[in-house]
Length: 421
Image (cartoon, rainbow, N blue to C red; front, side, top):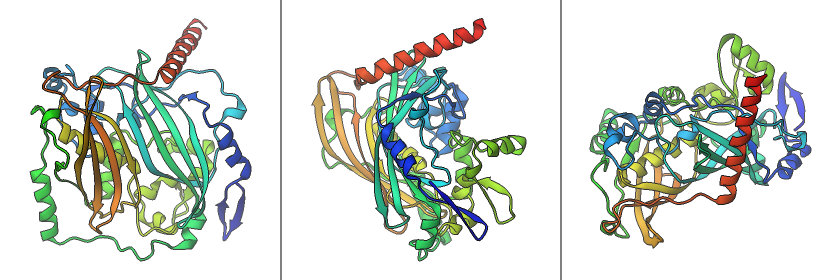
């Protein structure tokens, strides 16, 4: 991207060489050498992450509860990878394989597809390798020319066993273009009467978690309703609590004091002066309403990954302790602004048997108070059968498993070399 200066504000645009670099590195994997906020699955980390998006399922939050389940231990919430990953040691990446910087370009998460293969247990470590899966240019109504990048993240434990594989669809846009187009000027922040808050409270009060009451595959029928769950109204406090659970620290590492100064030397374009002239992270668009308005939005909005957490919360409530989410695909079609409320609903659309796995296909969605479906999703879950007793799990792809083994082996070699030195 190139830059120009307008009214003392630096304007960033795409550089053709950055776009070409992104295309050139599709299919090239590299070890994740920067840790997330947490690196080991302690009981406190698992509990804090689950509660950060409003989930008090004891399977995730109680270190004693899981002992009496099929898992034999407390396990991590499905989306734990966004808060917990330990850095890998790896050989220096060739310059031509490095990800383009896209300095000053805004990034939105537009959707994810996640496949889960086994639980992450208390005490486990999670490592990761990643790469670009697909790159395409698109003209956006909101922000002009956009770059659509699908990233793949392969997460594995300290035994090189793949825990999950996640593909994240991201939209890269030029910040000044979104401001000029004023697409969202007509949207008014939501307000609520005491009666409307009471209506939401009633949904929270009636929320059902299946828990230890096993849901068997034979008892599920196509057309079954998945129930109702509420989230919201979204507040700045919600964003603070979500961050406290571990999300949002890699790769930008928002921090304070001298650490923030050092971070500005590393990624200066990520720091944009606020109305007081103070350099602050562009990430503040999620809690700084004034900054959000400065780039063409009516107010701050959530993270797409937060809604993915909500969607998996809806699923784990329905499948119970003995079920397993095999795969989930989501789309983030609309922003979820401060003040917005979501109601989650869904239904069973299919059931089948594949080998030893008894599967159920689901369609579900989050609908805002405006009546807009902001996050439609599909999922396949594995349920216990009355014939076999346990929900069977899949085997991860052999080629990706082999890469995990190689990367963890090299990590051990480099660690041993460091110790010897």
